[in-house]
Amino acid sequence: MAQARGSQVRPAKRAAPSSSPKPSAVRSRREAPLPPLRELLANRRWSLRKEPFPHAFVDEVFVPEFAAELDAACAKVLSGERLRHFGWYDAHAWNFSETTSGPLRVFITPEWRDMVASVLGVRVTPHVAGGIHHHDIGSANGMVHSDYNPVYFPLIDEPAGDRKRPAAGAGSRRRAGSGTLAPVQLSQANLVGYTTGVAERPGVEIVPVARAVVFLYYLGNEPWVRGDGGETGLYRRSSDPVDRPAAAIPPRNNTLVAFECTPSSFHSFITNRRLERNCVIAWFHRTIDEVESRWGSEALERWKV
Figure 1 (cartoon, rainbow, N blue to C red):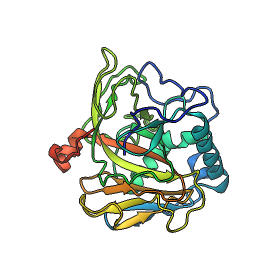
Figure 2: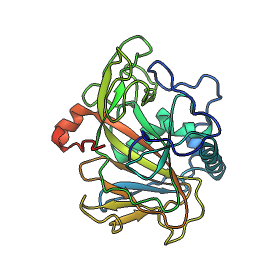
Figure 3: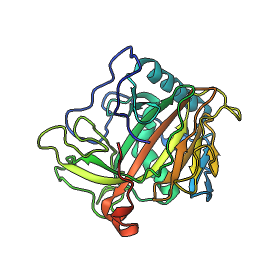
Figure 4: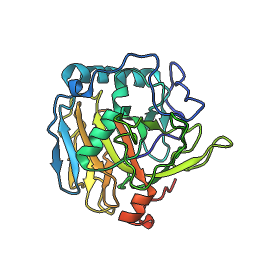
């Protein structure tokens, strides 16, 4: 799973919002803040499962009213935004940006990022990438992969003008010397290729990090029954057949699966036979120093496309 960077195949009623010309953290300037996250959550009991690798599953993530708002926001994106097909992966995508508004903003808040990471016991940097993935009926199986990849962000200016790279083991929980959460920094493909590390403009400094956590929140789908397909398969080995997962997470609305990205977090999209499938997917990240200290840099799954 990756951010979209393929040929445009879905017609759009209007152009997608453009990214900010300067790298910066996410800050809403024109929209009222979301309610506190604790008021939006319906289920604080996350089921931690061990097989085939550690992952968290949550049913009824948000209160019904907010879940309905998320469904409506997803439908609006699918009907009006410019979606791109990956080409090598049979899905369309819309990516989060600094102009993301409405209820979908909840997924790019520091509170959400740090809550999900803390449930999994993973320390993350401020960097976030993701958006909505849409699979038309009959989309091809994905490939079994780990999401344990190196990726790239632009170096941003801190509010006080202190330009910093994430230090080894640095977390996103709090700004140094303050009680505030570190702001989210979104990937910005107009400045740095998320998967390539290629600077798109002169003078842009590049920060390499690695994926540390991925979550999928299912929304905007028709009621699912066994046989519909569209599950997220979890596997013990990269060589396992896609259609024979050790565990399968069905795409039921207002449910979520999340796990740490490691050399053995093997997963894949399983073809959807009867219904379209939609989800919010996003990645949080860790420093390359932490990767090297735990598994060695040679364990990273290098991009093949």
